[in-house]
Length: 532
Image (cartoon, rainbow, N blue to C red; front, side, top):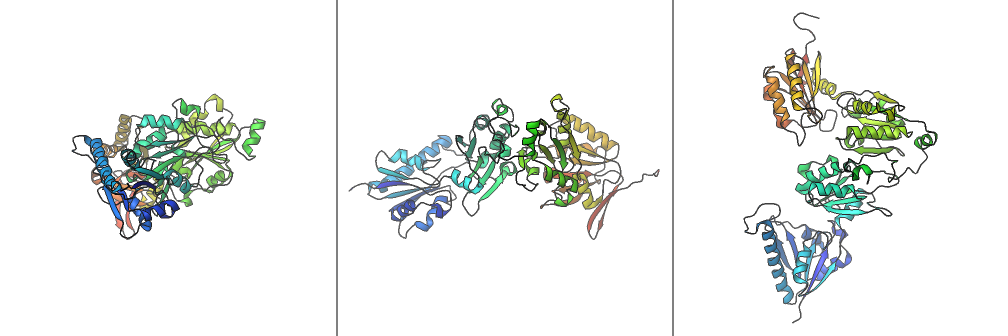
């Protein structure tokens, strides 16, 4: 009896309609259809191939003994996986030796980060084997993004997210474009590498490309705890219409990679703009630092709206840039939230070359935002001829306060709880001083995904000066789609209920909270016992 044939069937990224005609035919004709899954038993590959299966086919369900969990196998994780592959190959070999045709299903392409290759190595020397290529997740993600990955002589590098962060960072610094696979629990490290290489602002996240659950987000906006294995991060190469921070000299030297769009190596603008004219005459443009307000577009002032409309370039943190409607011909230079000085230098350099630059902040640009950073860098001699203006915006503190009444109705202080730009002992000294002075306090930047303990420490410091019954206002995403505002007490403040999008207002001894039909109202009296 002649032996059967092993087919490695590439199914594409998820949409059954992206299965090739050849793959569909071979699946239907096969005597045995084999597929992998984790221990939960749900096979993505079988789900894609289901429309092409026929009744009565034999199925071999190859269940991984471990995926990300621990194992008591004497050989550890790798030992358990190697043993599984040997056993799986033996099961398929039984069918092949009996003359049956085996179609081994593989999501994407069989030889692109696929389980099929482990069977091929163990069986192809004994049985006839042929591979049917499939559309890769890289291609599907690029299609979902609607953006070319590479053009002309650009280089695309495909990277596994399981690489050490420092190695991943170096690879990202030295390529035009990148696709990062194998995300899931690796995403925090991938995000760090994107940030360290200066590529975070240019990166996109695509989840389950081509499936009914497809999601496309800016990589900076992804929740680390909500990333499945079947997701991919793309960093497209520079295009004539969308300049990005590709392989800049700063990036190769270990910097953050933020450079002006006109730096050599980046694509120049294809249209005549005010910047082009200014470069030929040597006349500088200007930098306008604007505040969008906390979230609601109604809180953006007409003055700021006009400045945004007049700008040739927008510079800012990705999340804030995304709040500004796109305008044809206007260049957008987005970056992560840890490169304030570099962002300021980029804006000033663009203006020096003739651009009208709007540096975008949330809230008010002068309150823990970009105005100070821009002015500090503008004091350097090279930017002495670049005009800088600051346009105010509604602060997050005032927006949160308005939702409950007037908790900032008397003297108050604004304190950032972040210790990224100042030592924590300085934060503690200021909290203690303001609490002892009996002023209400607006707390900015209370927590982040990596910085969780400061809220509890702040509460303990304040309780040394304020009673547990002191009113506290928690305002999250005020003016945004997930807004929530609550009034609690200082003693009941739970740090787990606070994140980076939350602003806290801590009352003074003269702050009062009372219930109404509309909810709890809070005010800080304008008069002390001596009168005013």
